[in-house]
Length: 475
Image 1: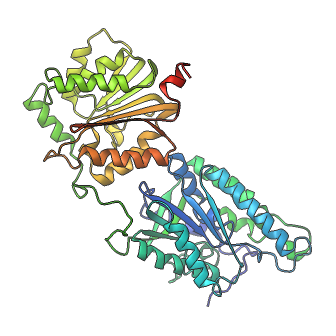
Image 2 (image 1 turned 45 degrees about the horizontal axis):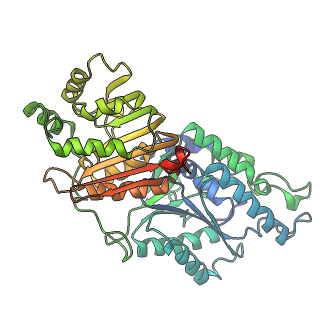
Image 3 (image 1 turned 135 degrees about the vertical axis):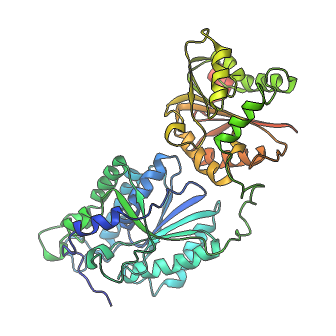
């Protein structure tokens, strides 16, 4: 049985640095709901504050659920009784989450601190109710079962059972392990630990959020019972640039009954750049952009669907030979158009010539990295026309939130895709627009246009919810 005193300095944080820095990477969850379940007010920040900040930065705020009321942190305090302490800790957790992820909801279950084992059945029922309300949970984050704290163990065991039922990823975050163990302790689950890399900004936000839990990091008074619960040296080790999690893949492959059906082609892989190189080597205009009435009409629909007459900064993803690019250029002060195929970019440059000096043609792909990454923005308009179905379902789900971070305040995204199946493409157009609806909704965008035909889908989403009439002063 592990025993420890949180007010003591514990294991020096630096002894963990080398091993934690070398952990295999756990990529940021990019699909579905992420729910962080904290045993106590402050666990959400100490164990997953960086995760909350990083998800907020890509427009996918997680939900926070706090199981206990936090009343047991200062037994015998002459300054704050249990009721006063609960009020303080509720305020602290709300302020901390506001720092990390302003759009995250905070649900307080209010179970007695230190008595979660006795309330286990009710805790499980309450968590099941929260997790079952709304879209399917894809990632459930909580404390680690081996932490040596009874409340942490109980909450983690309940979450493991719920994750198995929901078929979602479970990520358990050690906290007190770093205090009482050393790197060579056999209790450290090195084989299962994964590290979430944190940006400098996320680390700074986590430090500020930790400071918001004043009752835990500052003395309430000079009385010994009012000493900080967390030793300053221990806290310093919790604000490094990686957050460790014990990650468990979904326990079963079947989705729950209320989960959305898998999209056709979900197991297919993203088409490589070589596919497009070969396509352009065979055809000057592979998709008939210049001579098909279907394409001419679709461009007219695309341009007519834009809610503003003109845009300062525009990004076109997948410009091909530049036919739509030339028309977008007439509505833009500055237009950046990308493609993954050099042959397509060369043909687009030849089409535009010297008449459009405000147009920049660069290599870049949806979901690309390194030299193929999309420009960073911000852009007032992003156009995603006939591109999304070249990606696998998982790659598209990861790429769309990243794409939405390139939208400026008030920015607009237009997407248009062919609906009929194409043998080579990993996804149909309908699957692309379902994924877009999930990503845009999670990022707080409003759908302004929803145009469905037998052949195509055209959706317009915007951070500015006003209609065209409202934008132009007609109402």
